[in-house]
Amino acid sequence: MTWNMADLFERVADAVPDRECLVAGDRRLTYRQLDERATRLAHWLADQGVGKDGHIGIYAYNSTEWIEAFLAAMKLRAAAVNVNFRYVEDELRYLFKDADLVALVHGPEFDPTFDGPTLEIGDEYEAALAASSAERDFGERADDDRYIIYTGGTTGMPKGVMWRHDDAFFAMFGGGRYAFDPVESPDELADNARAAAEWVYLIVPPLMHGAGQWVTVSALFEAKKAVLLDGARMDAEHAWDLVEREKVNSMTIVGDAMARPLADAFAANPGRWDTSSLLGIGSGGAPLSPAVKEQLAKLLPNTMVLDSFGSSETGYQGRATEGRRFAVDQNNAVFDDSLQRVAPGSGAVGRLAKTGRIPIGYYNDTEKTARTFFEVEGKRWSFPGDLATVEEDGTINLLGRGSSCINSGGEKIYPEEVEDALKAHPAVYDALVVGLPDERWGEAVTAVVELRPDTSASPGDLQAHCRNHVAGYKVPKTVHFVDQVPR
Image 1 (cartoon, helix red, strand yellow):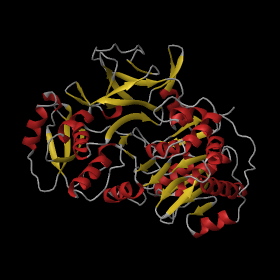
Image 2 (tube, one colour):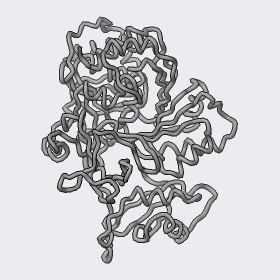
Image 3 (cartoon, one colour):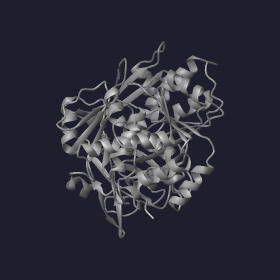
Image 4 (cartoon, rainbow, N blue to C red):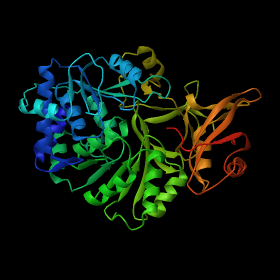
């Protein structure tokens, strides 16, 4: 019995071949069609010399072809590498080299400089598939085939996080039964697929990021339907159009950056969309601020808003209970600098870590691997950089990444907490908090704020508001107003 993800997808495709599974733009695919197209692409890639452990870049907006390339790589025992479509030439050059890409599938909007086989989505792509075999004759695969996801580079240039297929399946791709106990065998996965009730996911994030990938592929392992929000930019009204058209049951987003435009579009168009099918909105990758959660709850009283967290270095870790507090299992813990567990209710700040099913390490970076993954209490743990405290009830209070912590007059200030306070003001649409060099304080808490249309607020108004939510030393010393907060 193996937990190779290509094998597992094929088990689902064989169990429910005629069930619709993927929608993007005008294209709709059944499980049989998706599997066949991925198989044909795998043969084309093999004809270009791609084989086991080869790395295939995917440089495209959300599309069915993105998922086809992802599956095709796994069928070959190769690894798909997500390419950020916002990168400029220097960043692309770095990524192509660091990832050791041997082939590249790209959208027609892009004209990458790449020394190797490329395939442009469109007529060229369709011709390649038509000329390639649909036979599944790739040989045996293994649990320890590689899945690689490049991180966003919060502490430097992006790095590829390497996972074994079996660990990734359970830690990141839902284990065949997202939010419930994982399946115990591939046979059970196939049985569940045949018995699965209809459920439709709308994937708002780009597939080039973990949140988009993980929920989409998790849906495929559960024999559900994934609808991809297509296009170069997030279009909130288009997302609501898809909710109504596809009778979406669950929408996946990433934090306030997606939640706010969605909420504002919905509020500005009362009665425009039928959202009676929408039972849940799930956010991962960035916590929702309390103000945005409240706004969504008021607009959609019959829809549950769920907030979860995790990272490329840990997979799923926990779900929100209140504010930035999350419930976690026994495989998660907070350690101090001496690698001792932080006592619940102590208020001590430590580093959040996870054990169990975790990555192998970073591709081409043994030093970063050694700084992130190490043994504690006789187990191997992943320490991706998140700082946290432990509440008396055992829940984790996330404070943010240590690399973004502001040191002002000797006090440690976590930008996310101040940003949440600012966003709770009715005139604030978005806010970003940073520390700027200051002769007196070392670093001065500085806020960049985007106001809502047709509202007004002065720096003093926002500073006074913050004093009701955070300690005085955390209140921004300077507030700058901008037309749009850079993200």
